[in-house]
Image (cartoon, rainbow, N blue to C red; front, top):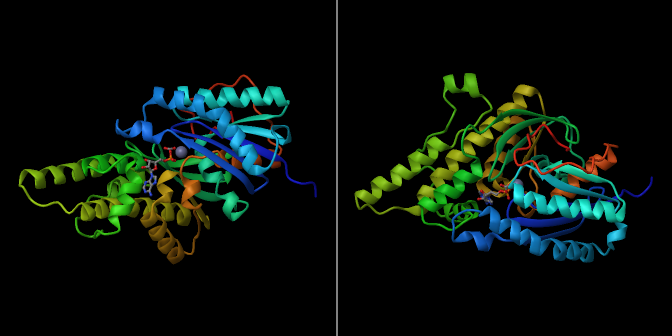
Amino acid sequence: MPEPLIVMGIESSCDETGVGIVRGHTLLADAIASSVDQHARWGGVVPEVASRAHLESMVPTINRACADAGIKLKDVDAIAVTGGPGLVGALLVGVAAAKALSVALDKPLYGVNHLASHVAVDTLEHGPLPEPAIAMLVSGGHSSLLHVPDLATDVHQLGATMDDAAGEAFDKIARVLGLGFPGGPQIDRIARDGDPLAIDFPRGLTSKPDLEKHRYDFSFSGLKTTVARWVEAQQRAGSHINVADVAASFQEAVVDVLTRKAIDACVTHGVEHLVIGGGVAANSRLRYVAEERATKAGIKLRVPRPGLCTDNGAMVAALGSIMVSRGVAPSNIDFGADSSLPIESVRL
Ligand code: KG4
Ligand code: ZN
């Protein structure tokens, strides 16, 4: 068997400049430069600041990835880049860099979907993805349940969030509770000292009539408003707020709905394998409850290690590598950055 090819993946859809290098399913390098500190005081990612940071970090991050992998640029056999969805100015920096490399090195270029990359990254830890699989993608911008017959070419959305993404809800509630940005890791940490059953916050789209119409959809804005009102009411009454209890109860409401719907999708579609990806998949409570419920339902669960769940270049390289190994044709060089690229468009 010939050695698998070396694929470089470039990610710049939000605030991380990521350059990953893989050979087949083996991770050789995962270099990241984050601009998160520059956004923290605004309580969210500022697109223009993110684009400028990508411009400054792109070449040094490419060089660092090559050094970490012990390769020269000319050893790269193919290049993959996030073409969308994401912040358009930020995406353009990665797309321009990837096109320049592809032309200069005369190597094929794959413009790939950021969301599918969040699923593909699991192959670097757990090997080839059993297909079909059900994938749950939970990030700062998206929450979707996917049926995946073939990750390189064929991904169907079963349902998605109707309003806020799961990560967005974590970030907003963290702000209400006076915790830092990004909020997910802060809530995860503080919730460990809280009681998840302290406050019974609502589980969106889980009533019988809602399930009939929105079985695999999510809604977190009602939960977000309820938590914010609850906190305001306590403040008005001058009552002490146990932040750990609020964080744990909020987190439990999110985790309960996500895991319930993901397992239901597996059981209903007769699919044995569930993959969870995206920044929120780093959440310790989500990982625990998903494992517990999957085991009970006879479903095999795969979740990448937390460091691979948040945005990185390795995930883009992983998806590019799957496309290369399956003989998927490269993208035409003229593709653009697509800020709202649908999940079904795995390759541009
Ligand atoms: O996938 P990602 O890095 O970027 C996007 O594509 O959006 O996801 C970022 C999101 C943020 O909303 C962040 O608060 C959330 O993932 N997140 C977490 C945790 N780590 C990151 N949410 C809950 N618990 C965590 N441990
Ligand atoms: Zn992401």
